[in-house]
Image (tube, helix red, strand yellow):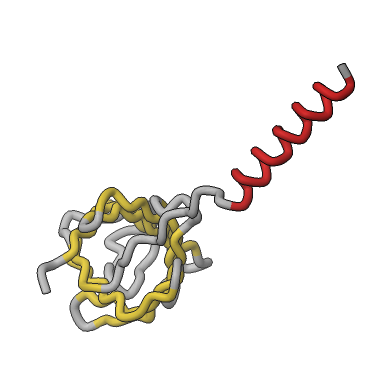
Length: 146
């Protein structure tokens, strides 16, 4: 009986070692290098570089602003580039989470959460909160053809 238990234990340990040693390799992060575009409206308090407050308290934008994100470099799950809209341009940095489906980005004054839908579609939500202004917006970015 003891010999059978030792045998079962030995087989179990060998099986575990095999699983750990050859464990499933996580997928590489998606390649986000390229140009992405999307338009959005926002709710905001106070003026910011992209919108002038029309009143005190919450303002709901009536016009869409198109943003262009140019991701120029990526190393593993980390990436960098620029974003622009109109006459404004900002530095962009970001990271893809271990699940390869979500992540975060930061520009010169705010933060984003992102959800990668597919190779050419990313959903983003942006927010910043300062004593003089706050902004919240969510929209979809589409990779443009090169």
